[in-house]
Structure formats: C-alpha cells, structure tokens
Length: 341
Image (cartoon, rainbow, N blue to C red; front, side, top):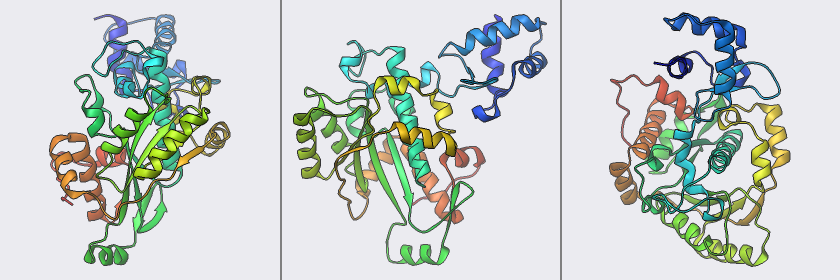
C-alpha cells in the first residue's frame, strides 16, 4: 500500500471536522507517524499533506487564509449525491440523471446545499440532508419521490446548547389533541432554473413534497428573466409551493470554502455569508394542516434515510429534547431502538 493510500485511511481518525480546530502541519506529522508502521521523513509527509489538500477526493483540507489542516467531509464520492442539482447547461449528457457533471459544478452544488442547511440552523431549524438516496444507484424516478433536504422546525420549546428543550406540558397537551409539535419542509434545490427545465424542476418538487407540511424549491442563482419569474410564480401560487432564490452565482459559490467548513460557520462567518446572499422570494409556500401519513408510511418503508429521520424525530419526542441529527446518530447505541411515531 502506498503512502497516499495509508494517509487516506488514517487521516479521518486524526483530523477534526471543524476548521476552527485545525491541526498545524508539525503536530499532524507527529500524530500521523504514530499511525504508520513505516518511517517517513517530515518533508515527505508535509509534501503529501500539501498535495492531498488540493485533491477534492482526499480526506484532508487546508484552512483558507490560515494555517492547519482539517477533515474534508465532502469528497468527490459523497458530493455526487448533489449532481441532480446541476442543470444540463452546467454539465454534459451521460449518466442516470441525464448528464455527467464536472468537479467544479459538483463542488458548487454541495456548497449551496451546505449554505441552505447552515442558514436553516442559524434560524433554529434542524436540516436533514438526503445523501445516500441520490448515490450511485439512484434512478431518475427518485427525483420525483424524494427531496434533497427536509427541514424540521420544533414548535414546543426553547433553543439551548444547539438543541431544543421541550415544554413537556405543552408537548403532552398537543399530543393528546393529535397535534404535531413540529413542521417539516420538503426542499428541492437547483443551482439554476431555465426556460426549458423549470416546469420539470417545479413538478418534481411538487411530487416529492406532497407528504410534508411545506414544499419549497430553492435556487442558488438569481432569476433575472421576468418571463421565467412569472412562470415560476404562477406555478408556485397555484400549487402552494414556495420558491426562493439565494442570489448566489457560480463566482459567489467558488469564493466560499468547502462544504464542511460552511457547516461550521460561526457568527462572524454567517454575517459575511448573509451579506453575500441576495434573497428573492418568488412565491410563498402554503402549509398543509398535517402530514400525509399514508405517503409517510410508504416513504419510511422504501427509503432508509427517511426512516432514520423519523426515528430521530421519535427519539427526540421520547427524550423531551431535540438535537441535530449528527448528534443523534453518533450518540445512539447500536442496541437502542427509537420509538415509532
């Protein structure tokens, strides 16, 4: 096994996911040496760190405008789950979704997905990103069945320590009356919409959100063509789908750090991000009074990621508090089985 392959195996166990906790090169060299059986010089290891940090498929990323390395959570393989967010004009035809994508376009799509998730978290929402659903085995019809992100909003507590502490009396009261203490937004995302594709994009969003409280079509680039805006607004208003552009073009996304770094943005970085975003609300989403439970049962039985999301919701209700899905996934012991909704 080459040194590069060894590093791909050991670095994920060493590097921190948050760029704020980045490890400087000298310290990383010492930590890596403890994991390698063969001895390598400091210069050799430092060279490989530098080269691999420029490789989007490698698990190591370098802090921009600073020193140190951290874990790249979105490699090329994992980023492929966002390839359907890219329109044919930004790619070439060929794969199961109708086109193959460049690495640059994939990176932009993953950055945008991270931006949407982090903005939701900043507003007190809990985003759940579907990634395995749109992996290598995904089929074209999956675009009509499943959203890209499901955003959870809890209505019954106070935000504390990155989570929500429920008002147990109110929770019990709502459940006794059959009311749902959370709302779910089903979100489809695109880097751009065009005249020849916006109807398909819209009706995919409508189709894969009929079970949720809200349906949203989220677009990265500004929609400047008034005819296109009118067409989207007409559909959104008729069917109750919210449509929003973040006003982020390709150059804007290219300037942002890698997706894993965006998910760890703190207050100062969020202020800079919001200065970059130019929201354009094209239509408002119309809420449904309750979830489409028949469709929910079908989704849970056919999609393991959506089933895990509902287990997360059930676990939160059972424990009287909500935490981000990553905390639930890492803290749940293998023998635990969350209660069902």
